[in-house]
Length: 550
Image (tube, rainbow, N blue to C red; front, side, top):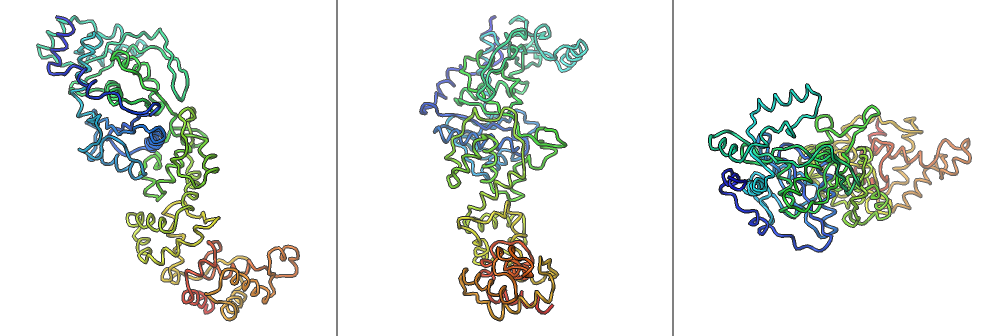
Protein backbone atom coordinates (compact mmCIF):
# COMPACT_ATOMS: atom_id res chain seq x y z
CA UNK A 1 0.00 0.00 0.00
CA UNK A 2 1.00 3.60 -0.51
CA UNK A 3 -0.39 7.00 0.54
CA UNK A 4 -2.85 7.01 -2.37
CA UNK A 5 -4.27 3.64 -1.34
CA UNK A 6 -4.70 4.92 2.23
CA UNK A 7 -6.42 8.08 0.96
CA UNK A 8 -8.80 5.97 -1.18
CA UNK A 9 -9.59 3.80 1.82
CA UNK A 10 -10.47 6.81 3.99
CA UNK A 11 -12.26 8.90 1.35
CA UNK A 12 -13.36 6.48 -1.40
CA UNK A 13 -15.94 8.85 -2.88
CA UNK A 14 -14.01 12.12 -2.71
CA UNK A 15 -13.49 13.91 -6.03
CA UNK A 16 -10.09 14.97 -7.28
CA UNK A 17 -9.31 18.53 -6.22
CA UNK A 18 -9.01 19.54 -9.90
CA UNK A 19 -12.83 19.34 -10.02
CA UNK A 20 -13.15 22.12 -7.43
CA UNK A 21 -10.33 24.21 -8.86
CA UNK A 22 -12.24 24.24 -12.15
CA UNK A 23 -15.63 24.78 -10.52
CA UNK A 24 -14.40 27.83 -8.56
CA UNK A 25 -12.07 29.66 -10.95
CA UNK A 26 -10.19 32.89 -10.33
CA UNK A 27 -12.66 35.78 -10.23
CA UNK A 28 -12.88 38.04 -13.24
CA UNK A 29 -12.25 41.31 -11.38
CA UNK A 30 -10.20 44.37 -12.16
CA UNK A 31 -6.70 44.63 -10.78
CA UNK A 32 -6.58 45.66 -7.13
CA UNK A 33 -10.14 44.51 -6.39
CA UNK A 34 -10.46 43.28 -2.81
CA UNK A 35 -12.36 40.06 -2.09
CA UNK A 36 -13.01 39.61 1.60
CA UNK A 37 -15.41 37.89 3.90
CA UNK A 38 -17.28 38.04 7.18
CA UNK A 39 -17.23 34.51 8.55
CA UNK A 40 -19.08 34.27 11.88
CA UNK A 41 -20.39 31.20 13.68
CA UNK A 42 -24.17 31.10 14.25
CA UNK A 43 -23.72 30.77 18.00
CA UNK A 44 -25.12 34.03 19.40
CA UNK A 45 -25.39 37.77 18.93
CA UNK A 46 -23.23 39.77 16.54
CA UNK A 47 -20.39 41.51 18.40
CA UNK A 48 -19.61 45.18 17.75
CA UNK A 49 -16.13 44.06 16.64
CA UNK A 50 -17.78 41.93 13.95
CA UNK A 51 -19.85 44.91 12.86
CA UNK A 52 -16.69 47.02 12.62
CA UNK A 53 -15.14 44.30 10.46
CA UNK A 54 -18.20 44.46 8.18
CA UNK A 55 -18.06 48.28 7.95
CA UNK A 56 -14.39 48.09 6.93
CA UNK A 57 -14.84 45.18 4.52
CA UNK A 58 -17.81 46.81 2.83
CA UNK A 59 -15.88 50.07 2.40
CA UNK A 60 -12.82 48.33 0.94
CA UNK A 61 -14.75 46.19 -1.51
CA UNK A 62 -16.91 49.10 -2.67
CA UNK A 63 -13.94 51.37 -3.35
CA UNK A 64 -12.06 48.66 -5.29
CA UNK A 65 -15.09 47.16 -7.10
CA UNK A 66 -14.45 43.93 -5.22
CA UNK A 67 -16.63 41.35 -3.48
CA UNK A 68 -17.80 41.11 0.13
CA UNK A 69 -19.24 37.73 1.09
CA UNK A 70 -20.89 36.17 4.12
CA UNK A 71 -19.68 32.69 4.99
CA UNK A 72 -21.18 30.82 7.92
CA UNK A 73 -18.68 28.76 9.89
CA UNK A 74 -21.01 26.22 11.49
CA UNK A 75 -18.79 23.16 11.86
CA UNK A 76 -19.14 23.29 15.66
CA UNK A 77 -22.80 22.34 15.55
CA UNK A 78 -23.16 21.74 19.30
CA UNK A 79 -22.92 25.51 19.91
CA UNK A 80 -25.27 26.55 17.10
CA UNK A 81 -28.44 28.43 18.09
CA UNK A 82 -31.83 28.37 16.39
CA UNK A 83 -32.13 30.86 13.51
CA UNK A 84 -28.51 31.84 14.11
CA UNK A 85 -27.84 32.61 10.42
CA UNK A 86 -30.93 34.82 10.06
CA UNK A 87 -29.93 36.70 13.21
CA UNK A 88 -26.50 37.44 11.71
CA UNK A 89 -27.88 38.48 8.31
CA UNK A 90 -30.56 40.74 9.82
CA UNK A 91 -28.24 42.26 12.44
CA UNK A 92 -25.80 43.39 9.75
CA UNK A 93 -28.55 44.44 7.34
CA UNK A 94 -30.00 46.67 10.07
CA UNK A 95 -26.84 48.77 9.73
CA UNK A 96 -27.32 49.25 5.99
CA UNK A 97 -24.69 46.66 5.05
CA UNK A 98 -25.50 44.04 2.44
CA UNK A 99 -23.29 41.24 1.21
CA UNK A 100 -22.52 40.64 -2.47
CA UNK A 101 -22.52 36.88 -1.94
CA UNK A 102 -23.32 34.37 0.75
CA UNK A 103 -26.15 33.29 3.00
CA UNK A 104 -29.30 35.42 2.90
CA UNK A 105 -31.27 33.38 5.48
CA UNK A 106 -31.13 29.94 7.11
CA UNK A 107 -31.32 28.01 3.83
CA UNK A 108 -30.93 30.42 0.89
CA UNK A 109 -27.78 31.94 -0.54
CA UNK A 110 -26.60 34.01 -3.48
CA UNK A 111 -23.38 33.79 -5.48
CA UNK A 112 -21.57 31.13 -7.52
CA UNK A 113 -18.77 30.27 -5.05
CA UNK A 114 -20.96 28.44 -2.52
CA UNK A 115 -22.17 26.62 -0.60
CA UNK A 116 -21.52 29.46 1.84
CA UNK A 117 -22.30 27.32 4.89
CA UNK A 118 -19.38 25.15 5.95
CA UNK A 119 -21.61 22.26 7.06
CA UNK A 120 -22.72 21.95 3.41
CA UNK A 121 -19.13 21.71 2.12
CA UNK A 122 -18.01 18.42 3.71
CA UNK A 123 -17.30 16.82 0.29
CA UNK A 124 -14.97 19.72 -0.60
CA UNK A 125 -12.97 19.47 2.63
CA UNK A 126 -12.70 15.72 2.29
CA UNK A 127 -11.32 16.09 -1.25
CA UNK A 128 -8.55 18.40 0.00
CA UNK A 129 -7.88 16.24 3.06
CA UNK A 130 -7.57 13.26 0.73
CA UNK A 131 -5.10 15.26 -1.37
CA UNK A 132 -2.97 15.94 1.74
CA UNK A 133 -3.00 12.24 2.69
CA UNK A 134 -1.88 11.37 -0.86
CA UNK A 135 1.01 13.84 -0.48
CA UNK A 136 2.02 12.38 2.87
CA UNK A 137 0.97 15.64 4.61
CA UNK A 138 -1.98 14.25 6.57
CA UNK A 139 -2.69 10.99 8.39
CA UNK A 140 -5.33 9.17 10.42
CA UNK A 141 -4.86 9.52 14.18
CA UNK A 142 -6.36 6.90 16.51
CA UNK A 143 -5.57 8.61 19.82
CA UNK A 144 -8.41 8.24 22.31
CA UNK A 145 -9.54 11.15 24.55
CA UNK A 146 -7.93 9.28 27.47
CA UNK A 147 -4.59 9.01 25.65
CA UNK A 148 -4.66 12.71 24.77
CA UNK A 149 -5.50 13.68 28.37
CA UNK A 150 -2.66 11.55 29.73
CA UNK A 151 -0.28 13.12 27.21
CA UNK A 152 -1.36 16.62 28.23
CA UNK A 153 -0.79 15.87 31.92
CA UNK A 154 2.71 14.56 31.20
CA UNK A 155 3.55 17.69 29.19
CA UNK A 156 2.28 19.96 31.99
CA UNK A 157 4.24 17.99 34.59
CA UNK A 158 7.38 18.35 32.48
CA UNK A 159 6.57 22.10 32.04
CA UNK A 160 6.70 21.90 28.26
CA UNK A 161 4.30 23.04 25.56
CA UNK A 162 1.10 21.08 25.34
CA UNK A 163 -0.09 19.78 21.99
CA UNK A 164 0.26 16.99 19.45
CA UNK A 165 3.73 17.42 17.97
CA UNK A 166 7.14 15.81 17.62
CA UNK A 167 7.66 12.78 19.86
CA UNK A 168 4.18 13.29 21.31
CA UNK A 169 2.56 12.69 17.91
CA UNK A 170 2.39 8.94 18.56
CA UNK A 171 0.32 7.98 15.48
CA UNK A 172 2.21 10.21 13.06
CA UNK A 173 4.70 7.54 12.06
CA UNK A 174 2.37 4.57 11.69
CA UNK A 175 3.02 2.78 8.43
CA UNK A 176 0.35 2.93 5.76
CA UNK A 177 -0.36 -0.76 6.37
CA UNK A 178 -0.75 -0.30 10.14
CA UNK A 179 -3.10 2.61 9.66
CA UNK A 180 -5.18 0.72 7.07
CA UNK A 181 -5.41 -2.30 9.40
CA UNK A 182 -6.81 -0.16 12.25
CA UNK A 183 -9.32 1.51 9.92
CA UNK A 184 -10.53 -1.84 8.61
CA UNK A 185 -10.85 -3.07 12.18
CA UNK A 186 -13.27 -0.21 12.88
CA UNK A 187 -11.00 1.83 15.16
CA UNK A 188 -12.32 5.44 15.51
CA UNK A 189 -10.01 8.09 14.08
CA UNK A 190 -9.66 11.67 12.96
CA UNK A 191 -7.39 13.19 10.30
CA UNK A 192 -4.38 15.28 11.36
CA UNK A 193 -2.16 17.58 9.34
CA UNK A 194 1.47 16.43 9.29
CA UNK A 195 3.54 19.52 10.07
CA UNK A 196 7.11 19.82 8.76
CA UNK A 197 7.94 22.79 10.96
CA UNK A 198 10.28 23.14 13.89
CA UNK A 199 9.77 25.50 16.80
CA UNK A 200 13.51 26.13 16.74
CA UNK A 201 13.24 27.82 13.35
CA UNK A 202 11.80 31.26 12.69
CA UNK A 203 9.64 32.60 9.88
CA UNK A 204 8.94 36.23 9.02
CA UNK A 205 5.50 37.26 7.87
CA UNK A 206 4.31 40.66 6.65
CA UNK A 207 0.95 41.64 8.09
CA UNK A 208 -0.72 44.52 6.23
CA UNK A 209 -1.56 46.28 9.51
CA UNK A 210 1.13 45.12 11.94
CA UNK A 211 4.05 45.01 9.50
CA UNK A 212 6.76 42.34 9.71
CA UNK A 213 6.35 39.79 12.50
CA UNK A 214 8.71 36.95 13.41
CA UNK A 215 7.24 33.64 14.56
CA UNK A 216 8.50 30.16 15.41
CA UNK A 217 7.50 27.71 12.68
CA UNK A 218 4.36 25.66 13.28
CA UNK A 219 5.11 22.14 14.51
CA UNK A 220 1.64 21.12 15.69
CA UNK A 221 -0.12 18.24 13.94
CA UNK A 222 -3.55 19.82 14.21
CA UNK A 223 -6.82 18.01 13.56
CA UNK A 224 -8.17 18.91 10.12
CA UNK A 225 -11.13 16.52 9.83
CA UNK A 226 -13.08 15.56 12.96
CA UNK A 227 -14.74 12.22 13.68
CA UNK A 228 -18.05 13.57 12.31
CA UNK A 229 -16.43 14.20 8.92
CA UNK A 230 -16.52 17.99 9.32
CA UNK A 231 -13.37 20.13 9.31
CA UNK A 232 -11.82 22.21 12.05
CA UNK A 233 -11.74 25.99 11.65
CA UNK A 234 -8.10 26.15 10.59
CA UNK A 235 -8.46 23.70 7.70
CA UNK A 236 -11.88 24.91 6.54
CA UNK A 237 -10.82 28.55 6.41
CA UNK A 238 -7.80 27.70 4.24
CA UNK A 239 -9.85 25.69 1.74
CA UNK A 240 -12.72 28.21 1.70
CA UNK A 241 -10.59 31.33 1.37
CA UNK A 242 -8.75 29.70 -1.52
CA UNK A 243 -11.81 28.46 -3.42
CA UNK A 244 -13.80 31.64 -2.77
CA UNK A 245 -10.75 33.52 -4.05
CA UNK A 246 -10.45 35.73 -0.98
CA UNK A 247 -7.63 38.27 -1.38
CA UNK A 248 -7.66 39.85 2.11
CA UNK A 249 -8.40 38.21 5.45
CA UNK A 250 -9.28 41.06 7.82
CA UNK A 251 -9.70 39.82 11.38
CA UNK A 252 -8.99 40.57 15.03
CA UNK A 253 -5.43 40.13 16.23
CA UNK A 254 -6.44 37.26 18.51
CA UNK A 255 -5.73 35.16 15.39
CA UNK A 256 -2.15 36.39 14.91
CA UNK A 257 -0.67 33.39 16.71
CA UNK A 258 -2.33 31.10 14.11
CA UNK A 259 -0.37 32.62 11.23
CA UNK A 260 2.48 30.03 11.16
CA UNK A 261 -0.08 27.22 11.02
CA UNK A 262 -2.17 28.93 8.35
CA UNK A 263 0.86 29.71 6.21
CA UNK A 264 1.99 26.09 6.39
CA UNK A 265 -1.49 24.83 5.51
CA UNK A 266 -1.70 27.10 2.46
CA UNK A 267 1.74 26.01 1.30
CA UNK A 268 1.03 22.29 1.76
CA UNK A 269 -2.23 22.66 -0.17
CA UNK A 270 -0.49 24.55 -2.99
CA UNK A 271 -2.62 27.68 -2.41
CA UNK A 272 -1.66 31.32 -2.84
CA UNK A 273 -1.76 32.94 0.62
CA UNK A 274 -4.21 35.83 1.03
CA UNK A 275 -3.06 39.07 2.61
CA UNK A 276 -3.58 38.88 6.35
CA UNK A 277 -4.69 42.07 8.10
CA UNK A 278 -4.89 41.73 11.88
CA UNK A 279 -6.43 44.72 13.62
CA UNK A 280 -6.38 45.41 17.35
CA UNK A 281 -9.66 44.66 19.15
CA UNK A 282 -11.94 47.37 20.46
CA UNK A 283 -10.98 48.16 24.05
CA UNK A 284 -12.86 49.39 27.11
CA UNK A 285 -11.32 51.56 29.82
CA UNK A 286 -12.18 50.46 33.35
CA UNK A 287 -10.60 51.65 36.59
CA UNK A 288 -7.76 53.22 34.62
CA UNK A 289 -6.96 49.97 32.82
CA UNK A 290 -7.70 48.83 29.28
CA UNK A 291 -9.35 45.54 28.43
CA UNK A 292 -11.12 44.01 25.45
CA UNK A 293 -14.78 44.92 25.18
CA UNK A 294 -16.61 41.92 26.58
CA UNK A 295 -19.81 40.13 25.54
CA UNK A 296 -20.34 39.21 29.17
CA UNK A 297 -19.65 42.55 30.87
CA UNK A 298 -20.53 45.27 28.36
CA UNK A 299 -24.03 45.74 26.91
CA UNK A 300 -22.55 47.84 24.07
CA UNK A 301 -20.64 44.75 22.86
CA UNK A 302 -23.85 43.45 21.25
CA UNK A 303 -25.08 45.28 18.15
CA UNK A 304 -28.66 44.86 19.45
CA UNK A 305 -27.75 47.45 22.13
CA UNK A 306 -27.62 50.22 19.51
CA UNK A 307 -31.08 49.34 18.21
CA UNK A 308 -32.54 49.25 21.70
CA UNK A 309 -31.02 52.64 22.54
CA UNK A 310 -32.11 54.01 19.19
CA UNK A 311 -28.66 55.08 18.02
CA UNK A 312 -29.05 55.34 14.23
CA UNK A 313 -27.21 52.75 12.15
CA UNK A 314 -25.46 55.53 10.25
CA UNK A 315 -24.10 57.00 13.51
CA UNK A 316 -22.71 53.65 14.64
CA UNK A 317 -21.09 52.99 11.25
CA UNK A 318 -19.50 56.46 11.19
CA UNK A 319 -18.12 55.95 14.69
CA UNK A 320 -16.72 52.52 13.83
CA UNK A 321 -15.13 53.97 10.69
CA UNK A 322 -13.46 56.54 12.93
CA UNK A 323 -12.10 53.71 15.10
CA UNK A 324 -11.00 51.88 11.95
CA UNK A 325 -9.12 54.81 10.38
CA UNK A 326 -8.12 57.70 12.64
CA UNK A 327 -7.97 60.09 9.67
CA UNK A 328 -11.72 59.63 9.07
CA UNK A 329 -12.57 62.26 11.70
CA UNK A 330 -10.55 64.93 9.88
CA UNK A 331 -12.05 63.87 6.55
CA UNK A 332 -15.56 64.16 7.97
CA UNK A 333 -14.86 67.69 9.28
CA UNK A 334 -13.59 68.69 5.83
CA UNK A 335 -16.49 66.95 4.06
CA UNK A 336 -19.51 67.30 6.37
CA UNK A 337 -22.08 66.57 3.68
CA UNK A 338 -20.44 63.77 1.68
CA UNK A 339 -21.62 60.18 2.20
CA UNK A 340 -19.22 57.97 4.16
CA UNK A 341 -18.77 55.84 1.03
CA UNK A 342 -16.68 58.66 -0.46
CA UNK A 343 -13.99 58.22 2.22
CA UNK A 344 -10.94 56.25 1.05
CA UNK A 345 -10.26 53.60 3.66
CA UNK A 346 -6.65 52.47 4.05
CA UNK A 347 -5.97 49.15 5.79
CA UNK A 348 -2.44 50.12 6.80
CA UNK A 349 -3.82 53.05 8.80
CA UNK A 350 -5.75 50.79 11.16
CA UNK A 351 -4.71 50.91 14.80
CA UNK A 352 -2.00 48.51 15.94
CA UNK A 353 -2.61 49.17 19.63
CA UNK A 354 -6.42 49.15 19.78
CA UNK A 355 -8.96 51.95 20.03
CA UNK A 356 -10.92 52.72 23.19
CA UNK A 357 -14.68 52.43 22.79
CA UNK A 358 -16.03 55.79 23.94
CA UNK A 359 -19.81 55.99 24.26
CA UNK A 360 -19.62 59.78 24.76
CA UNK A 361 -17.74 60.13 21.46
CA UNK A 362 -20.25 57.85 19.75
CA UNK A 363 -23.13 60.02 20.96
CA UNK A 364 -21.33 63.17 19.76
CA UNK A 365 -20.94 61.57 16.33
CA UNK A 366 -24.62 60.62 16.45
CA UNK A 367 -25.70 64.19 17.28
CA UNK A 368 -23.89 65.39 14.16
CA UNK A 369 -25.42 62.65 12.02
CA UNK A 370 -28.96 63.31 13.30
CA UNK A 371 -28.55 67.07 12.87
CA UNK A 372 -28.38 66.47 9.10
CA UNK A 373 -31.60 64.45 8.95
CA UNK A 374 -34.64 65.96 7.29
CA UNK A 375 -37.77 66.13 9.43
CA UNK A 376 -39.23 63.29 7.34
CA UNK A 377 -36.19 61.08 8.00
CA UNK A 378 -36.43 61.90 11.70
CA UNK A 379 -40.11 61.08 11.84
CA UNK A 380 -39.81 57.79 9.96
CA UNK A 381 -36.83 56.46 11.94
CA UNK A 382 -38.14 57.58 15.33
CA UNK A 383 -41.58 56.08 14.62
CA UNK A 384 -40.03 52.78 13.52
CA UNK A 385 -37.99 52.66 16.73
CA UNK A 386 -40.94 53.72 18.92
CA UNK A 387 -43.23 51.07 17.45
CA UNK A 388 -40.73 48.50 18.68
CA UNK A 389 -39.50 49.98 21.95
CA UNK A 390 -41.72 52.84 23.25
CA UNK A 391 -45.48 52.59 22.99
CA UNK A 392 -46.08 56.03 24.54
CA UNK A 393 -43.80 57.76 22.02
CA UNK A 394 -45.43 55.87 19.15
CA UNK A 395 -48.80 57.17 20.36
CA UNK A 396 -47.49 60.77 20.48
CA UNK A 397 -46.27 60.42 16.90
CA UNK A 398 -49.63 59.19 15.59
CA UNK A 399 -50.41 62.74 14.44
CA UNK A 400 -47.89 62.79 11.62
CA UNK A 401 -48.52 66.37 10.46
CA UNK A 402 -47.98 67.81 13.94
CA UNK A 403 -44.97 65.55 14.60
CA UNK A 404 -43.32 66.71 11.37
CA UNK A 405 -43.70 70.31 12.53
CA UNK A 406 -41.96 69.43 15.80
CA UNK A 407 -39.11 67.63 14.03
CA UNK A 408 -38.79 70.61 11.69
CA UNK A 409 -37.80 72.96 14.55
CA UNK A 410 -34.24 74.21 13.93
CA UNK A 411 -33.75 71.67 11.16
CA UNK A 412 -32.44 72.32 7.67
CA UNK A 413 -30.71 75.61 8.50
CA UNK A 414 -27.00 76.44 8.55
CA UNK A 415 -26.72 75.64 12.28
CA UNK A 416 -29.14 72.77 12.95
CA UNK A 417 -29.92 71.67 16.49
CA UNK A 418 -27.68 68.99 18.01
CA UNK A 419 -29.58 68.02 21.13
CA UNK A 420 -30.63 64.51 20.11
CA UNK A 421 -28.11 61.66 20.05
CA UNK A 422 -30.46 58.67 19.98
CA UNK A 423 -34.11 57.92 19.49
CA UNK A 424 -34.52 57.08 23.17
CA UNK A 425 -33.82 60.81 23.83
CA UNK A 426 -36.70 61.95 21.64
CA UNK A 427 -39.67 61.50 23.97
CA UNK A 428 -38.14 63.62 26.71
CA UNK A 429 -37.00 66.17 24.10
CA UNK A 430 -40.48 66.72 22.61
CA UNK A 431 -43.06 65.66 25.21
CA UNK A 432 -43.73 69.25 26.31
CA UNK A 433 -45.01 69.98 22.79
CA UNK A 434 -48.13 67.92 23.50
CA UNK A 435 -50.80 69.73 25.54
CA UNK A 436 -52.31 66.64 27.17
CA UNK A 437 -48.88 65.66 28.53
CA UNK A 438 -47.66 69.15 29.37
CA UNK A 439 -50.81 70.51 31.04
CA UNK A 440 -51.18 67.38 33.20
CA UNK A 441 -47.79 68.09 34.79
CA UNK A 442 -47.30 70.13 37.94
CA UNK A 443 -46.53 73.73 36.93
CA UNK A 444 -43.98 74.37 39.70
CA UNK A 445 -41.31 75.25 37.17
CA UNK A 446 -37.74 76.25 37.92
CA UNK A 447 -37.41 79.74 36.50
CA UNK A 448 -33.99 81.30 36.09
CA UNK A 449 -33.03 84.86 37.08
CA UNK A 450 -36.59 86.17 37.23
CA UNK A 451 -38.30 83.82 39.69
CA UNK A 452 -40.71 86.07 41.58
CA UNK A 453 -44.20 84.84 40.70
CA UNK A 454 -45.76 88.32 40.64
CA UNK A 455 -43.02 89.57 38.30
CA UNK A 456 -43.51 86.50 36.09
CA UNK A 457 -47.28 87.16 35.93
CA UNK A 458 -46.67 90.80 35.06
CA UNK A 459 -44.35 89.82 32.18
CA UNK A 460 -46.74 87.20 30.81
CA UNK A 461 -49.85 89.40 31.16
CA UNK A 462 -48.28 92.34 29.35
CA UNK A 463 -46.85 90.08 26.63
CA UNK A 464 -50.19 88.40 25.90
CA UNK A 465 -52.13 91.66 26.07
CA UNK A 466 -49.86 93.94 24.01
CA UNK A 467 -47.27 91.96 22.06
CA UNK A 468 -48.39 88.43 21.22
CA UNK A 469 -49.35 87.74 17.61
CA UNK A 470 -48.76 84.26 16.19
CA UNK A 471 -48.52 85.74 12.69
CA UNK A 472 -45.40 87.81 13.44
CA UNK A 473 -42.25 86.89 11.54
CA UNK A 474 -39.20 86.05 13.60
CA UNK A 475 -37.61 89.51 13.50
CA UNK A 476 -40.87 91.23 14.44
CA UNK A 477 -41.36 88.77 17.30
CA UNK A 478 -37.85 89.41 18.60
CA UNK A 479 -38.26 93.18 18.31
CA UNK A 480 -41.45 92.90 20.34
CA UNK A 481 -39.60 90.93 23.03
CA UNK A 482 -37.15 93.84 23.22
CA UNK A 483 -40.05 96.31 23.44
CA UNK A 484 -41.55 94.23 26.27
CA UNK A 485 -38.22 94.25 28.11
CA UNK A 486 -37.93 98.00 27.64
CA UNK A 487 -41.49 98.58 28.86
CA UNK A 488 -40.78 96.66 32.07
CA UNK A 489 -37.46 98.40 32.74
CA UNK A 490 -35.18 95.60 31.47
CA UNK A 491 -32.29 96.13 29.05
CA UNK A 492 -33.23 95.67 25.39
CA UNK A 493 -29.83 94.08 24.66
CA UNK A 494 -27.66 91.68 26.67
CA UNK A 495 -24.63 93.81 25.83
CA UNK A 496 -26.37 96.90 27.16
CA UNK A 497 -27.09 95.10 30.44
CA UNK A 498 -23.53 93.88 30.87
CA UNK A 499 -22.18 97.41 30.45
CA UNK A 500 -24.45 98.79 33.19
CA UNK A 501 -25.86 96.02 35.39
CA UNK A 502 -26.83 98.38 38.20
CA UNK A 503 -29.31 100.15 35.92
CA UNK A 504 -31.46 97.11 35.07
CA UNK A 505 -33.01 94.15 36.91
CA UNK A 506 -32.13 91.99 33.86
CA UNK A 507 -32.20 91.90 30.06
CA UNK A 508 -34.33 90.73 27.14
CA UNK A 509 -32.89 87.19 27.47
CA UNK A 510 -34.24 86.94 31.01
CA UNK A 511 -37.66 88.08 29.76
CA UNK A 512 -37.70 85.47 27.00
CA UNK A 513 -36.65 82.79 29.53
CA UNK A 514 -39.79 83.51 31.54
CA UNK A 515 -41.87 82.91 28.41
CA UNK A 516 -39.81 79.81 27.48
CA UNK A 517 -40.22 78.18 30.91
CA UNK A 518 -43.93 79.01 31.06
CA UNK A 519 -44.52 77.41 27.64
CA UNK A 520 -42.20 74.40 27.93
CA UNK A 521 -41.32 73.91 31.60
CA UNK A 522 -37.62 74.14 30.64
CA UNK A 523 -34.93 76.78 30.70
CA UNK A 524 -33.12 75.31 27.69
CA UNK A 525 -34.96 74.38 24.52
CA UNK A 526 -34.54 74.79 20.77
CA UNK A 527 -35.56 78.09 19.19
CA UNK A 528 -38.48 79.58 21.17
CA UNK A 529 -40.02 81.39 18.19
CA UNK A 530 -40.16 78.13 16.21
CA UNK A 531 -41.65 76.28 19.20
CA UNK A 532 -44.39 78.92 19.49
CA UNK A 533 -45.16 78.65 15.77
CA UNK A 534 -45.75 74.92 16.19
CA UNK A 535 -47.76 75.23 19.42
CA UNK A 536 -50.13 77.82 17.95
CA UNK A 537 -52.27 80.47 19.65
CA UNK A 538 -54.69 78.21 21.53
CA UNK A 539 -51.97 76.10 23.13
CA UNK A 540 -49.89 79.17 24.07
CA UNK A 541 -52.93 80.81 25.71
CA UNK A 542 -53.70 77.67 27.71
CA UNK A 543 -50.14 77.42 28.95
CA UNK A 544 -49.78 81.08 29.89
CA UNK A 545 -53.21 81.19 31.55
CA UNK A 546 -52.22 78.27 33.76
CA UNK A 547 -49.33 80.33 35.15
CA UNK A 548 -51.48 83.47 35.48
CA UNK A 549 -54.18 81.56 37.36
CA UNK A 550 -51.71 79.86 39.69
